[in-house]
Image (cartoon, rainbow over all chains, first blue to last red; front, top):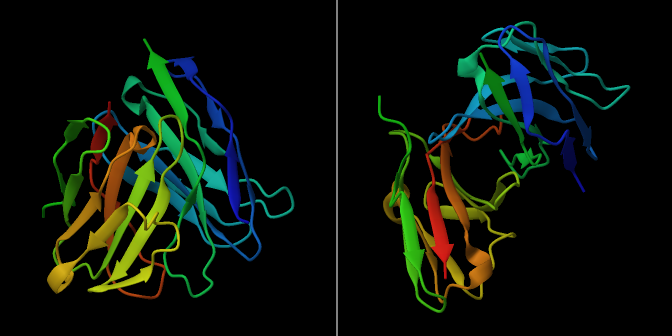
Length: 114
Length: 115
């Protein structure tokens, strides 16, 4: 079945440090890939997405490139801020007539300190 | 524009008691989802509605869980009786359209603790 594997957290960084959160996937078809973010006390929000190989999703300084050859979708940001502290979820969707069903990873908690 | 609204925010019950969660999706969104998120895990789909119809309930434990979406707007998810292992955050999400490419909007969730 479809699955997503993320690096375990928590990840603790100093402000302005470079961020990488690894994500790899297994899927039977050709998935779309997503990163969702969950700020404390809030619901999940779509951060970025990529729908085909070599696509790059970007938003709020975050980027992730759909790498089919390595089945990866690593999240990166060049300079993190305290306000980026949240839990980040990698997810995939394969359209097989089942509609908009997302398969999530376990989440990676990011803590950014001054 | 209001987002997806869920209530209650927190619920504490004893095992074997019934519990219900309520979700009001974004206005005009015909697709509604219920997810369960166990501690330290990602959300897992329980049921998906297209308007009033449950089109994917394969992951819903039907012996104790039930859901309804009367009139294709609000939805309730019920557990009866609750078990200790049901402690989790129950998330509701909604989206527009039926192609499967639409963005999902999530509510803040209901955190259930079964004692």
